[in-house]
Length: 539
Image (cartoon, rainbow, N blue to C red):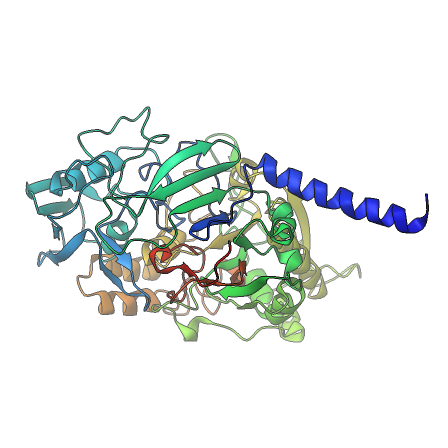
């Protein structure tokens, strides 16, 4: 067999492997231009409990449209929260009662009529359902009549509009907790046609949808491993494919590279408390005598080079991140620091009593070596790379970071005593600020993983939560990052070393027009699916 023949056979084998892999995922040839196939990003994993908006599909910290279920509010192309199933709302003077008016011309996909009772049922059920969505501040929800819903809150909450934005409404008359996830009924633009678990979910247009009908009559959502994304795009069988970190310099014939901002802050959580022998639940150790020292946290924030991380790891498809909310309306520029200053970082350590006494390049203080473990999830290539570069840069200023790849259960079990590579994308300040930094006791929950606490910051966050004026609340959120020399920003107490703001990137097949999308929500590429079209005649 000659060399040319061997090459041809090799190429054919590769093509067969790609096609076979696609087929195993449920993919098939389809030339209907109104059929769309999307490979889901790892931030939208296949839902174990099915497509229920009560247990994670379109709620919680993911913040994306659930497709089958509509929400009371939606985000428009300008990034504003506007009515969807709702027609308007009002807030009582004490901030504890939200009254929402809803449409009277909507039917569910099973032809039953939508009304205020469905909204009340959805939120009352969601409040008592174990999910990532925190609705514990709801006292009760009541349908006052068919078009009016009254939400009674335990305490005023300026951020409640985000809960109204991200909870998909389910029908009160036909909901069955045991079957709903696999056979969801909603008022959204699509209905679930069938679900091949472990492979794909196929959605078709909801004939009862009350708003603009989508151009794409069928949407196939694949749930692939990140390692297969590039090959899926190269196969040409998938219309939308996420771009992995390792493929940011790649191009694929027939596809456009689309970059979407998302406020996707990634950084390192540093245990804030000293190790005094305490533990949570008898197993999770609390405290770290290295990271509890402010000089360590300050030096890391000042000494690392965030721009280098953006360039080397993300090929420039990221920006330096300092506070975790740099791109949000409630960011505080004064809470940032100037970074990539190794000499200043070393000076901070020296003034804090940290010195390299044995010449090994790592500083010590009172016999304690400046060394700590950093846990990260190895299945995410971006977080693995970011952890590695962070450790390399920390060593330049005299701090040893020991990398530990682990699953999330292990990470959560160690987050109170060891550093952890974390990420947040929520535009909701309750999640991105209050839950992240408001003081609390250890509870095993991943929010505020370093047990940060500051009385002055707490007061400002509480005031922001209880404000009935959203603009005033944003000012208070901003101030809580830097107050009286402290606060959760790097110029304050620096409980985190936020590093990069990584955009969401996609290969999108030529001829597909995704319309105008809001900034800062790139994690939800399908946010405006009803505006998508295919401008060429072949799929």
